[in-house]
Image (tube, rainbow, N blue to C red; front, top):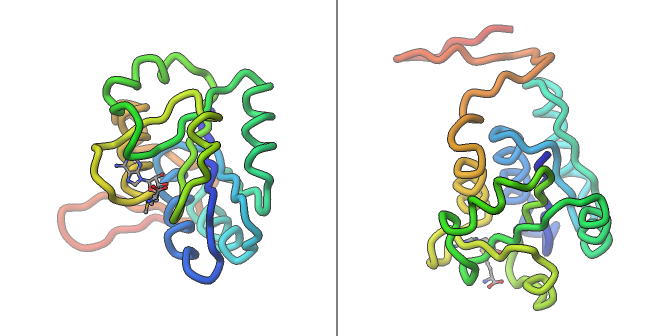
Length: 171
Ligand code: SAM
């Protein structure tokens, strides 16, 4: 079970990035995203995609991030904070892959200092600054060793048939 926790989202400027954090997590096998801000628009746009494209990815809006972390740990889960200051994803992965429940935390502009101490693992995807979307994608791909690249989403209204040229859909 893998969920994402998005902290620091600013509704006035992060809507597109946060939506893409959710869609990336969903596409690569996460169960849902906790959003530690109030943005019903982001929740709705991700869930609209999930309705059409299948599966049951959930977005929980306006959570308290510290409470989500506490509850996750109480339920026996581990917390992975993606940050360029952490230990490398390849070094951290063998231990993380032993966990049954993984909460992946991604920030926006500035992550509160306490986050580093609350995480079980602070993990970097390179030590260069880039983005919550790219770091999440690479983390998920390493976690699942590529196995979630072609997931089947139950109850999809629409499905792409991979093709060399052009666009093929099944609906
Ligand atoms: N400068 C901010 C800080 O130091 O807290 C981070 C800004 S970055 C645009 C937003 C998020 O992308 C970070 O919180 C982190 O989750 C993720 N991120 C960016 N680069 C990363 C890297 N090299 N490895 C892991 N995560 C990264």
